[in-house]
Length: 260
Ligand SMILES: Nc1nc2c(ncn2[C@@H]2O[C@H](COP(=O)(O)OP(=O)(O)OP(=O)(O)O)[C@@H](O)[C@H]2O)c(=O)[nH]1
Image (cartoon, rainbow, N blue to C red; front, side, top):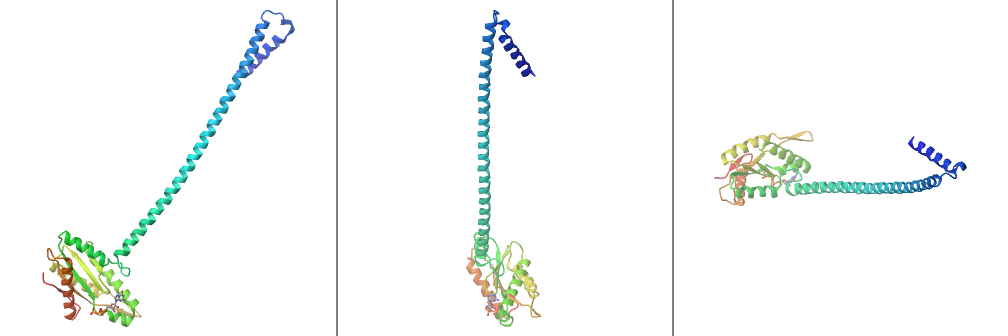
């Protein structure tokens, strides 16, 4: 509205200057110069406005380009960090799998010799009381010979499962050899261990697997001994082995303990 009024006023002034009847008026020249100066200033103002508009649009473009670049870099970094997270998870998974493979028996999933020996060494170092039991399946060769190796494997798995289910969380049960298991009963003396092992033996005798419509079960023999303070774990192991041998020689299906 104001613009329209200004234009109309200027047109009026121009008309007054151009009108021949005002040609000799004493204010005519002054008004004409004023009008011209106003027009020149308007042109300059318009130029300044154009420059400022161009500058603003350039600044906005630059801001957009910077913003786009920032977003692109951010997306790239997010992608890289996702890849790196995935890679780290994979490495962690592989490490866990490697650790599991190096410390556990692949057939039964029980701790292996290496793991239980590490625990044994720690128990001796920390002067903790414990009892070792070597437990061996009786006449296991016959199972393999009569029913095949696969059935033997199934039985080993069933016995291992029953053993780890029956023991306390802080005990360790490892596959020591073929059909031999080593139990580390923590904070347990010979008498307590004997009760635990006898209970275990009855439990294991009830474990059955089916092979060609036949129910198969086994008995186990065990030799146990309590660790003597200061005794190297190898010596305790030898004593448990001797007790197992005696149990086998005495007719199997029993547990015997070595003197403390
Ligand atoms: N199926 C199967 N058999 C195994 C595995 N490891 C060892 N064995 C078998 O276990 C049997 C052990 O036989 P022996 O050492 O003679 O002992 P045993 O027949 O149990 O007799 P006693 O221990 O004297 O009662 C052998 O036939 C081995 O082949 C295994 O991972 N799977």
